[in-house]
Image 1 (cartoon, rainbow, N blue to C red):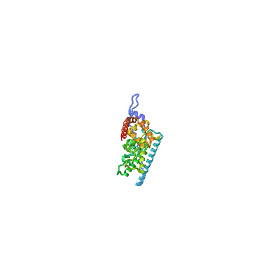
Image 2: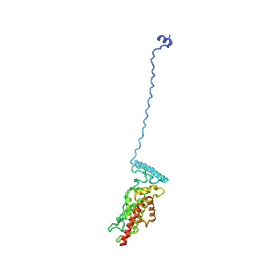
Image 3: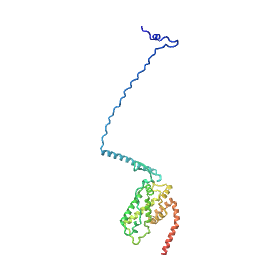
Image 4: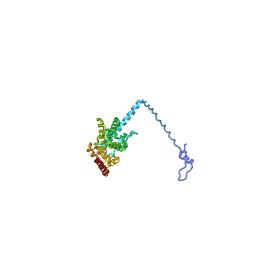
Length: 308
């Protein structure tokens, strides 16, 4: 007959101490087995379809299309920048314009007065021989005409520039001031007469000479004005600094301007001089100091003529 587990343990394990639980035989611990990991399913390989091979012509067409789209986006940016400047104008010394970087072809901001706007023109100088009445014998007439035509075209290019580019050209291109000064020195005055043996101008040459003279004065007049329109202007405080920086207006040049244009452009010459003396106060002091010397030379000339 089977012995109950409790009696069987008590008999084989021996009596336990009073108050202590009966001793149990040493039991072997049972270590639970780890569950087997589930097999990881490898992702199925996706077979990519090969892109169709494009011909060279198709690639070039795509490149041209992308370039054109990028160009249109940039044009929109430039147009928006122009509208923003027109809506909220600022003085030229502070203004900036969005342009294309020549190296990267990306839009960048450039100050409106900067070397970036300077064109490679290399202005011609006006020589005494360019006045046919004073030209020496044997001078090639066609060569003189060709030089005057080039000078006329260069002046037209300069005058067609917007205000910021015009001032940038004058500030950073030394040939502009050399050309302007040469004309004031050698251009015919309204009181000049044809000397004995001098040649008379033909109709075409006379028209060309008058056009060059008119454009020369327009350049000088533009240099004297702080404002050209509602969107292009210098601040009154800073314009005098730019006039002094260019150093275009001196006592001698002011007198030459009066000698050449006092008859043909009297009203605009008065406006020019008023603006120059307003923004270049030291010029008035220089003229006042030079006046006695000029008057003395005039009196000497008058005395020599009286004796003659």
